[in-house]
Image (cartoon, rainbow, N blue to C red; front, side, top):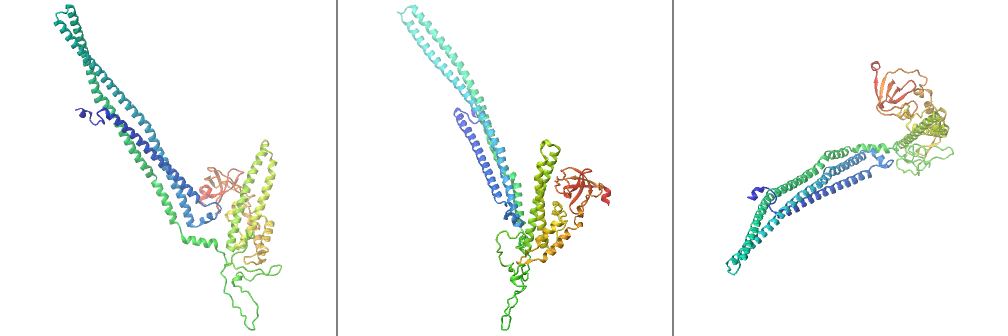
Length: 567
C-alpha cells in the first residue's frame, strides 16, 4: 500500500537517501566533465585557426619580391585566392570556438552553480526531516522504557502490599502504608502509559507525514532537478552540433572559392604571359653563307649580315677606331655583371622597354611624393604667414628650395628615360597617356629636354655591342616635335574666359588634387560642372568664383542640365 501511494518517487526508505545523494553528485561531476570537454574543443579550434592563419600568412607573396611578380600567372593568382579563402576558413573555426564558449561553456558554468545550490538545499531539507523523525523515535523509546519500568514498580508494590496484608504480625499502620505505596505506583504507571500512548500517536503521525509527504516531496524535487540536468546536457549536445552546422555554409563557400580559383587556371594564358615577359624582340638569325677557301679564292674572313654572330648587322666602327664585338643575343649568356648601363641598352629591346617603363613609373611616384610634401610645406608656410606666433615662414623656405631642386632633377630623369623609351618604341610619348595627365611633369622645358635627350641618344651602345650616332638626330627631331607650342595647348587655359555652368556633380569619393590644374574634393561635396569629360577621364568643376579645376570623372556623379544633355 505504501509503495502504491508513493508512486514514481525515487526512494521509499532512509538508505536510498544516501544513494540518491551519491547519484546526484555524480550527475554534477558529469556536467563538469562535459563542460571541460567542450572547453578543450574550443581551445583546439582556436589553436587550429591560429595555425591556419599563420600558414596562409607564411605563403602570401612578399612585397617587391619575385613571388609578387609571379602573380601575373593564373596559377599563382589561384594559389593566392586559395590562401585568402583559407584565411576565411580559419575565421570560421574561430567562430566555432567563440560560439562554443558563449553558448555552452558559459551557460553550463552558470547552470552548475545553480544546480549545486539547489541540490544542497534539497538534501538539507531531507536531513532535517530525517533528524526530526529520529528525534521523535528517541522520545517514543524513552517513554516506552519509562512506562515499562513504572509498570514493574507498580507490580512489585502490589505484591508487597499483599504480603503485608496477609501477615498477621504486621501492624495495621504498616499495611495501610504498603497499600498507599501500591496505589501510588499504579498511578505513576497509568501516567507513564498515557504519556507513552501520546508519544506513540505523535510518532505515528510524524512518521506517516515523513514517509508519505516530506520525503516524497523532497525526492520529487530531486528527481525533477536530475531530469532538468539531463535535459540541459542534451540541449548542450545539440547546440554543440548546431555550432558546427551553422558555419558549414560559409565553409562551403570558402571551399567553392578554392575550387573556382583552381578552375580559373589557364595554362595557355600563362604560357602567353611567359612569352610576353621574356620575349627579346630580335628576329632569328639568317642562314650562314658558304665561305670558299679553295685555290684562287681570297682568304678573307667576312661576317654575314645574317650570321649568328651578327644578328643586328655588321658592327659599326667606334669613333676611336676598331669594331665592336657582335653579341649572339639569342644563344649567348650576357656576360655583363652588375646592373648594366643606365639606359638598359645591354638588354633585348622588349626587356629594355619594360625596364625603362618601370623606371619611369618609379620616378613619377617619387615626383608625386615630393610634390605632396611640397604642397604640405607650402600650406604650412601659409599658416605661419597668417599666424606668425605659430612659426617663422622663412624657416620653411630652405626645405621648399630643396624640394623644388629634387623635383626638377627627377623631371629631368623622367625626360631622359622617356627619350630612351621613345627610341625603343619608335615613337614619342603621347600627351593623352594617363600618367602624363596626372603627374603634371611635362611642362615646356624645350632647351633642357632637348639637351638631355641629345646627350642620351649619342654614343650609346646598341644591343649588338655597336655604338650608334644616327639615332641622335632622330631623337632630336622627336624632342623638337614634343616641345612645340601646340604640344601644351591643352593646358594653356589660364587666360580663358569664365566658362558657364552646365550642371552639377556630387563627389562619390574624396580626391586630393596635388597636381597643377586639379582641385581637391571631399566625399559628398556638391560642385558645379563647367566642362564635360572629353574622353580623357577628367571633368572640369567649379567650387566658387576663384576655385575650379579637374577631377577624375569616376570620382563624381554628374547631373547635367537638360539643354546640355540634348545638345
